[in-house]
Length: 236
Image (cartoon, rainbow, N blue to C red; front, side, top):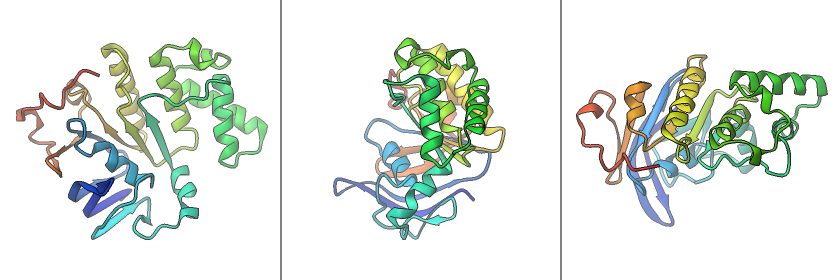
């Protein structure tokens, strides 16, 4: 199991946002986390990559690490096995697409220049962005920037991708293409955990659905089509 949360309590600024969380992720699973703004979705994701400490838990493991006992020096190795995608892309705007990706590989220990170049070409091909290799981020559309961000996330062949509102700044068609790409990646064995307000995607690209509401989190995969999700389906 890639993620195993049992009875986890998550607080933000000394305020409990989620309590008694049971959450699990296995290889190749495609998981949505829905809920209105402030319901704890992003806080949950931050605990997985250790941006936010877990207050208490019966069990909290990610990629074989005990998150209640992990040392700060061990966090970079954990994150190296993850791909993290943000709503605002977070590309380095002072360098080209190719140099953005090269920076990540070098920062994570890659030294062979040919191997680095080959891996960059490979991931850009995977996301359909080979032709943008020499472009600067500002020359790309939002959807293109997000594709590059996905390419960056899969550089080190992560076991899991954590995506926080990855379609939040995109038009509906582009958003659909991005979620479709993430779904395709999950089919190769990489688990994808994604927060979203884009409720129509749940029908278009089916997966496991968790809902954060009123301080709790529940698996609503079997029931979400019958739930009132108007609160969660906010304009992105």
